[in-house]
Image 1 (cartoon, rainbow, N blue to C red):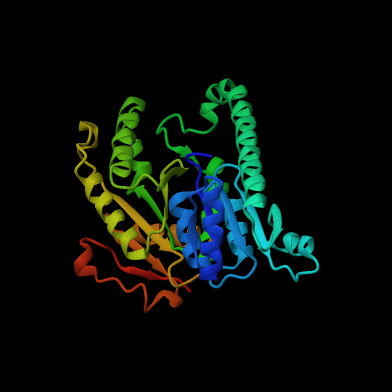
Image 2 (tube, one colour):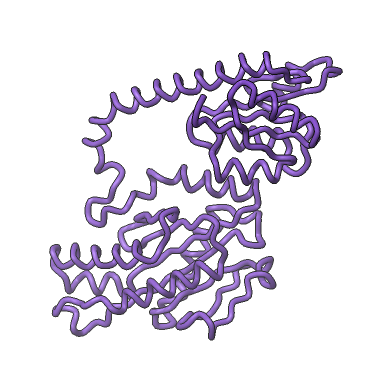
Length: 335
């Protein structure tokens, strides 16, 4: 079991120390946490291979942690629930929590020496089966790459990755994370495309793609939302930070050297940003609608601006200082 990461979650310090010693006797050096909040931080940072969690923990409950592991941790990670000796229906408790295995205290060296290697081995076998399945369909995936990527821009297609976006929004609501959306488009898109031949359009979109990709993080997801709009999903990003990124991209677009045929048109772009910040009820559909509305507002105002879309709930927490953020357009308050 060398190299395997096992997380032990137990609110009782003395009991946790005893269990750590028992695990070390079977050659396991575990990570440990005293409450659900600490456990969630370790799970996010370390992606453990096995979780052993007491039935009663403060902060995020055992059920919260189990759901998070099964939904968001990659691979096949087993969740072991530990209950007291006096519990009469441990299997019923396991079902309510959603755990894979339930054990009664005390956790002895003998029990841990059997259960942990067995569960880790089972996870390895399930992962290997999944790998072989992926390997077998690898050719089909490569041949069908055009189903995932927009052939002109090489951004992922929105309809393919919509389920990933919805999962990010779901996770944000449940665990209090912030997710922001950035939607951008060329100003005067239709008129501008009329001045370009297909090759010039390809080159211009390639430059636009670089302007976007070079100014976002690896965890951000750039997508082709429609023929003339790019959507960027930005996990763990508040409204102000999203606006700063949007303004930076807007500035990079203005620096693009335009084809000679666009001599009569100035190349510029506008962006709209929306967020779940301070508005946990804001769903994906609502943010899309707000961003679309923001872009529509940018056109009549001359374009070349960033529209910051927020609901009345975000009035206090999402206040943005326009002077600090550069050439931002008016902030749009959503009803």
